[in-house]
Image 1 (cartoon, rainbow, N blue to C red):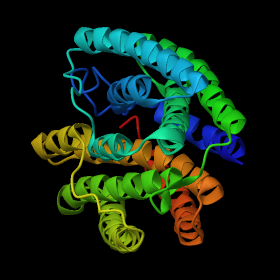
Image 2: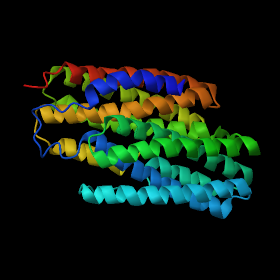
Image 3: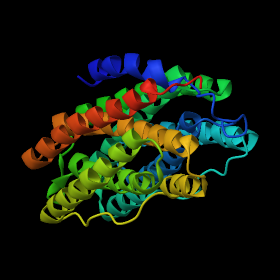
Length: 329
């Protein structure tokens, strides 16, 4: 199902994502939003997976889990070195700390021992590698920087192998699914989805006030309402499941908002907002679709399924706006 959805997305994304409108100056397009988002997100994932893997090397008791943890740490350290070099080349300051979702996951892992720890660790690895794989595939197909496109192609293949490895270990060990009353899968989804809502609402609030294209303003205003309501629903469900609602956003989200605020009103702001929204909703769709299938709680699966459908619809809406613009004027 997830792979089939990726194939459906590919055509419409290709029609728009590789287009640079002529109203953007060379300076403004020195690093495309797609390239920046991929690089920053991948570095952020590397930080988290190294931290979780090192914890697993200390706490895991199953040799297969330790073996996977060592492999994961080695992979993400090497990935981080390559991406840090790319960030230096492109004069971009990379993230240096865990994002809020990863911080919460790390805190949960530190409270667990034995099979419960090993199950939660492997679940986090499966999810991270799945998310990273789709981000890498998007960069491989639609990135502008040749070096980052090559990195995307490499990571798309390697993260798929890493995910399958973590899944095989989990199946062989038949580890318990529960983590303090809520599965690791469901906990991660709730935190991730709340972060997406806060990020998308933050981007949209800026565009709702300042976008010059009426369709962009309309989309942004709709997104402000949608993500406000969605966050409230998720926070209520999380509380009911014993998960403290997320309140903080990542450094990447904060940086994107700062770049939007620093732009003059005009087509560049509209275009940057649409691209930031498209990248975020693209990744969210796949994470939500997984939760709707692999989640353990029926309420979580239902809200994730609706989120998957909504994020796909919103993603296509932003792409249609860009596709309809007169790019050569």
